[in-house]
Length: 204
View 1 (cartoon, rainbow, N blue to C red):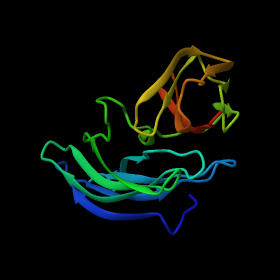
View 2: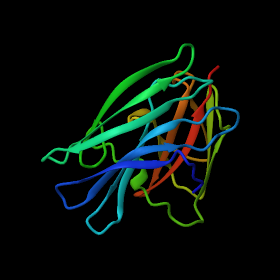
View 3: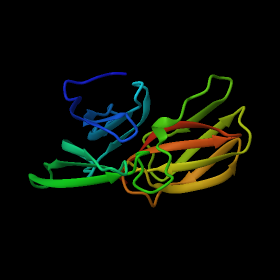
View 4: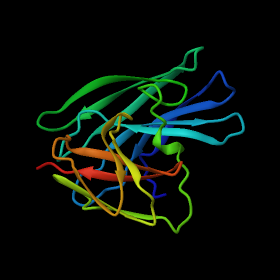
């Protein structure tokens, strides 16, 4: 994947299951004319070094300056719960900094059972699907080809499902006018398999 000099892990901590969790920050790719966020980055690997999940989190999104987040440290509790802290630099409308704290369970979820989207393995074709427009304003089209009726979820940067539709097929249209501007994951689930894409909700 494309990288940036800003991408870095700053701390590594062991987990009760014998694995490790690393935290840092990642500059996400620029989409269209919208600013890219520097997101807090959390990455979990097993005792064998295999990726189990990862998540990117942002706070205080601004449509011009985006969101600039730095992770300061991480601790892992005996239960497997992971707590990370850091700070956010806000440049508009005035320069300020804010501290933040995030707590996730051993599976990387803020809410139990969220199933972090990064654990999904993308299967080979022939299944195809398209998301457009991207960035989107009020309406998001999802075009399904070779997919049985599918369930679709829109997930925010905190791992929370903010919109869900079931039994979609062909060309589906989702009303996203009520969602705040920012980056979202789109998760498609059909016949026990899942695919994940990314979309930006633009500011009207």
